[in-house]
Length: 261
Image 1 (spheres, helix red, strand yellow):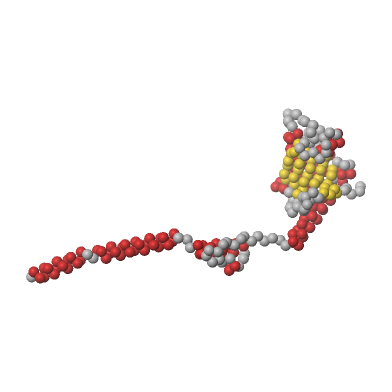
Image 2: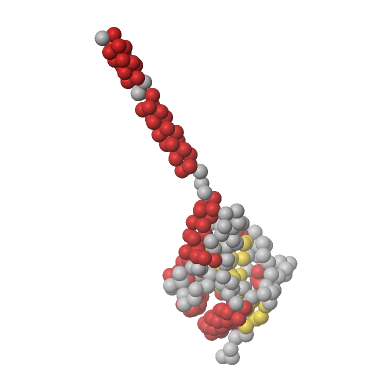
């Protein structure tokens, strides 16, 4: 009887230690969980680079195999397609023809004023420049267009409305100061005059996103202000039609003459 009790007590003691097995399994699973979490938090640089190159190849429309790099390799430079010289020259040639045709149309619309010396049409490397003497457009010290000049400017605006080139309208004055309630200085006078021409062009259909107006006052004189003729030459409105692909060198200047009456 005593032997049986001793054996039963030994079996009960062995049963109390079985929780260690479950505890060990729990610790092992917890350790494995943290190992997996650590592995997920570490970026595989090689796989990341291959993924990045695959995305680049998709956006560049290039074969994917050309951009797959082994781990540790430097990234490939971005390849920007550059037009071949012949294609670039063809684009510039077509643009040059458009600019010259536009200059001829403007010349035809302003031919009487060109022959009278009130308008100059110049072809430069940047595009076409139209210089209009302010006596044709405005009364002295005013920014309201003269009635006789409106039809001429409308004809120019109809030509510009058919183009895609940026257009900048500049107002210029001489160095004679002006002090009126409307125009405290030549800055305001030149700016309002340029804006007046811009508004007329917009009304005849020139896209507003192509138009810019700037007033320079007397800061960009083309002649000396010491003479009456020089001051008259400096009082002007300049219309700059900028080429999308300017030619080089920028100082090329050619005056376009008016056709015979």
